[in-house]
Image (cartoon, rainbow, N blue to C red; front, side, top):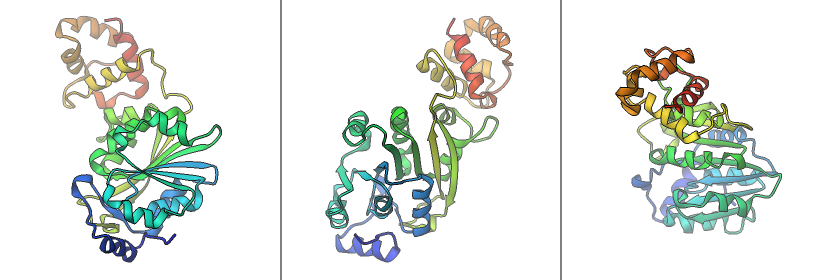
Length: 287
């Protein structure tokens, strides 16, 4: 199993199998050993860890993960890469490559197939920018089975995931992610360490899954409906956004509910904490 992470080795595989990065799949192959090692270290991969990797590409990160993990299950949508990945990992006992679309994969079945009780589970990946959010939300919806998620994503998106109330990047996505995990940017990554180079810088973010949700709400779907409503138009006040979703005829009732939980109707959605959104959600359910 030869390490494919350097530029020279990546170029060799691309040439040997007549491959070009597919723009429609957001393919950018990471070629920096130090960054690859930092990703594996951030995920705390060890001999008791089952790793699910999304989009292994030419296997640079897969190689590093396989050296440390109990097993690596890599899900790849691009069958053009099959010969190169079989060359690299065909005889590696703790690596399995599944050629399928992660957005159509049954995550429950995936976890039940590969994870035994007591094993640590990590999702580790260099994610395509254009499907970062849906992939993350699919895994976060199964957060009770997962210990940590460490992914390379667009820097701007990483800032949104980890943002605090009042910050420019804070929004409904921040709340959706932080509801089930603790988000921390591990490092920023320049575009120069990829083949081909993307148009933007990247960041590695770590999501540690909470043992309990950050807040308790009786109706999660309604909670996220309220959050979405509050951010519908960022320049508008909280009351105006809520009226747009719940009806202008309910203004007096909503103002009274906000007053009862000590939230100023003139605040903007990006200033409210997750705890305040939980209070707001519980209050608005009486409408």
